[in-house]
Figure 1 (cartoon, rainbow, N blue to C red):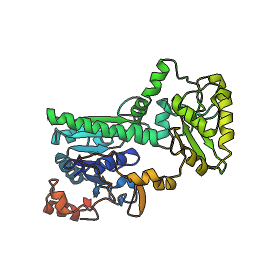
Figure 2: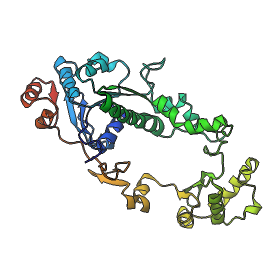
Figure 3: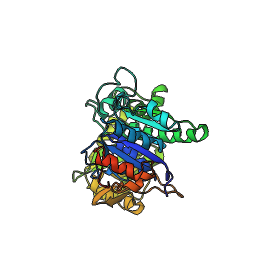
Length: 376
């Protein structure tokens, strides 16, 4: 039984971070119905679609379809949607309509730009959201252009994670107040919040806006990635002096022959020396040198290799569900552990009855073409 067991969630199907919010809640035990468009066919092939009761295909162009979803929200604690601002209002499923049916409902809105501001109605993707929050600029080597960090910082870190946090905070508050509220989760806001540590360094003068010159943006030679003899790479992150000393020992370097670690003028010399030595052995050889030390040096693995790494294997960090290798549920709770959801569950009339839609009503709506789904 996960920590969110018994929590009912209505998810209006979308793309990007919205489904990831649902995955997090489902892994933690929430009971989720995903509302799809007619003919959508669900998303059982996507890892982020795991653990749902769905999808329930609903014709939201018909009043009966809208009413059916409102009935479901009346039985739910949470609704998650990821449309542009105003879309659910036009459908008749906006916050006012849903909260009128269920005053305790947490209505979570997952967007890139947020519900207001000049860019709110515009299209965008992760790369755009983290560009205006200042984060993308930091993923830049000196003299090069910024490199998008996949869609992990905007969509998932700054978007879905903050949305899930907002949902949990609002659920806790509702237990005391008896009142729900709207969670406005914007990827611009969340990605900006992820940069709090950097803003602190900027405030004390230890971080420059010149990319590729700082402690964590490949400016420091002891926090970077280096090529090995076989074309592999090693990640070096020995910031603390005691870890840096172990790194130098592993390379066979005498500190007295090198510039000091904190001497920025000497960083180019250190970088060139580290690169020269690390290119003399294979990735496997360097892994063996450093794996039992506190040098903070690790091999850079592919997705496939990561699943087989001894540490990940020992912890069960990756699992296989329905023939697809995927990350296991996280984080780990000692008493009410989360569960890797697997493929979406089958939504049947009897299960819908627990949400307030009686079997004869479901059959009528199915016959009229308002509702459909693989279990109906």
